[in-house]
Amino acid sequence: MTQIDRTMSLVRQAVDERISQAIAERRDGWSDAGPAADELLDAAADLLGGGKRMRAVLAAIALSATAGGARREEILSGRACAGLGAALELYQASALVHDDVIDAALTRRGLPAAHRRFTAAHRGAHRLGDAEAHGRSAAILLGDLLLSAAGSELGTALAQCPQGTRAAARAAFDAMTEEVALGQYLDVRAESLPLSDEGEDHAAAGRAMEAAALAVVRRKSARYSVMRPLLIGALLGGLPPRGQAVNLLEELGEATGIAFQLRDDELGVFGDPARTGKPAGDDLREGKRTVLIALAWQRCDAGGRALLRRVLANAQADPDGIAAAASLIEDCGARAEHEKRIDGHVERARGALEALAAAEAGVSPDAVADLSSVISLLTDRSA
Image (cartoon, rainbow, N blue to C red):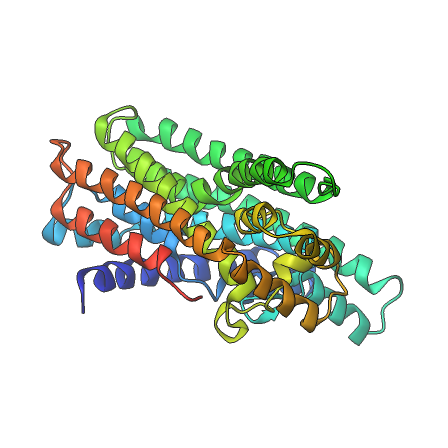
């Protein structure tokens, strides 16, 4: 077993146990609510049963960054890491549920999205009213429940750490949740903006689209996927808020997070549904204005732009149209340029890691090695 495998195993086991306990505690506390509580908590348990726990792992690596040997393993499997990891996983689950409602997604991690699950249950029980409206409403409330539970678990984690570290870590967590909401709105808003008309400067329009897409990536995904978990863990572990180590972890985290999301956007078009857990081309049907689409818009001709107009934000786009759009993105060179963008962000992340390893900031070689492995795991993947 490699070092990163050991780290991930310790963290995942502790976080899985804490999440199971959190759900069980709520079942016990809400036993008087009858089957309604179980419907919500069953959906939560199924959603939280999947995932790689990478946010929890990142936070744990940073929280234990100055420890080594047996002490480091004790921290990785301890109550603070378990509580913080559970908080991050619960928050992510909340964001995913709400995101799927916004996108009208069909699946999540190979299972029906929460709103689809509740819709099917409504129909199966022959209840009154609009089944799809019920499904959306129930999913929104599930997301709210998960968000509240995340805050509760964060409080449990903070209580395990020195009082002097709590305020900065709490502020970083709150900043993360607020920023994701802003990023989500930027994403929703971008999807509603008209594409440039023929006769306009399409290269300029594509560059503007790319800049807007990167703003969404930073605020909706990159920071909350990588940078914020590292920052929260580092602050809770006692690293100085504006010290060199924290600054470098922020640089490493944002660069890795951007590369992670760009890879995810590419998989949204070219990925294998059996590995990604969602249908190929869903991002195109949803009209996502990704960096990949922006690069294609800059490079394709009038016929290519007409094809993209037909496919983007068209929930009824057929598989042939999706396949044609994917071929266009490949053939015009957008995918290759997108790979260069990913490589550039990975290079920036590794530069920050080298500086962190060389700095006299008290970060252990074990933490540096784990961060190096995590950069690869997040950016060189097929699912």
